[in-house]
Length: 328
Picture 1: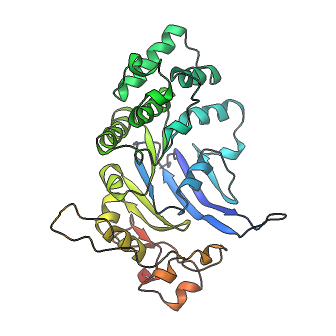
Picture 2 (picture 1 turned 180 degrees about the vertical axis):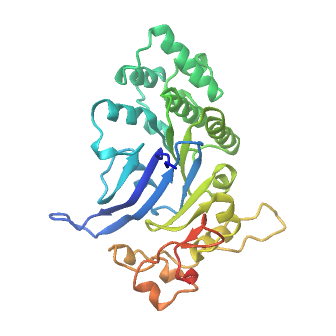
Picture 3 (picture 1 turned 90 degrees about the horizontal axis):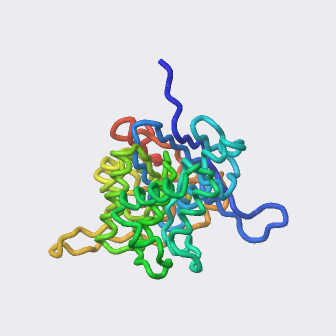
């Protein structure tokens, strides 16, 4: 039986900053040996979760081609993205779109909102007539609950944060993407708009077959919409698996602390859990270091400093935790 080629496959992605020739400053391992597969079908929402500095945005930037990896490879439909040229490179830029945390930074404040759509149509040579282009833009806006007359002739500062974010989701959708990298897309909007944007993501996945790489520090929204989850700690995978399994039954000591630190939505229950200690970055200077959670771990052992623990199967093969507690 032939195995289908994944939509996106990441093999041992590692990114190290600093420490090179003529480079001053300390050496930081931003991402280490990260591997992940997103299938062509069915469409899925894969969550990358973790604290600030955990490597989430480094991973997104590598997939989008903004930075080069120090080691490892990223494949899109079986092709190494660093080797894509010509039409293959254009197709990749069209099929892999991004929605960022602060959409205002993406806009040019001197142009009306319609300019971002005109730029896409012009640069990617989509072959639309003027009337066809307008219809495609209108259709994209309808998907996110907006109308052209509401937003296209306005300047970015005249839109609310939620409108600006939905306009960017519509722009991504207009490209007929296969994968959208959503980097903290709802952290800058209020609760009602957050729910609306998350609903749009679910609709695009379920009705139109668009996969998402959802990057967030918010485990509650990950639980709402995520199919699979990777929890990062200082650049490496602490735990991975089905989102429901990882959040309801965490195994890695860090993930357990992270889950326990989320307040319960009940005023009668006092929120007392906190992440213990301050994150120690000293183990991040080399890929040869042991477990980076060692300084904060209540279950640390001597062997944890000898080498980074591999991912061990817990509760079945789909859930894995990088912790020697599960070595058999």
